[in-house]
Amino acid sequence: QVQLVESGGGVVQPGGSLRLSCAASGFSFSSYDMHWVRRAPGKGLEWVASIRYDGSNKYYADSVKGRFTISRDNSKNTLYLQMNSLRGEDTAVYYCAKDRVSSEAFDIWGQGTKVTVSS
Amino acid sequence: QSALTQPASVSGSPGQSITISCTGTSSDVGRYDYVSWYQHHPGKAPKLIIYEVSNRPSGFSNRFSGSKSGNTASLTISGLQAEDEADYYCSSYTRSTVRVFGGGTKVTVL
View 1 (tube, helix red, strand yellow):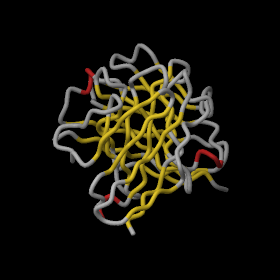
View 2 (view 1 turned 90 degrees about the vertical axis):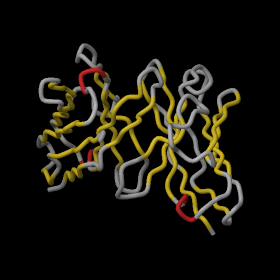
View 3 (view 1 turned 60 degrees about the vertical axis):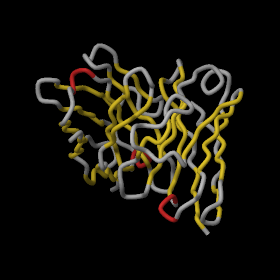
């Protein structure tokens, strides 16, 4: 069964750091580009970051560029999002998503992990 | 990175058809046939319901259909059912920012 399970969310103070993980199973993780998408309270989905299947290229939304780092460990079938210099506007549920090859679509999503940035 | 434009809400009675629009620009929706649609029930994982403008994932209901004209893509839900009540998002590939989502549309079944 194809599955993505996020973890690592929690409450953090402004300026703090957090690392999210996304454990993948049921598919050949190392063959697919992966993404992070978030949904802030009362707002819509927002693309956050993407990484190529081999980690060779990484892409970020302007809102997180320079503060967040996406990475992956294909030997552990795990995707990561290192979040530094967190702000209140980063409060959201963070989802990892698998890329549908050649379709530029997110075909499998995790249940999400909640991040709250508050003092 | 401007979001794609969707109506905030759309409603319909059971059995009716509704259409959700998604307006972008010539740099995203108008340029690429990489428009996808997602259904999101709050608290659950979003689901891909349409990819590449009009294709449905295997096993997904054929009551959902997609199309595109110029800079505007559309999602039509036919034979509206209670379980269709959810938030719907469009997304497009864009060379400059990789991906962009619409603001989301809340579908209410009356």
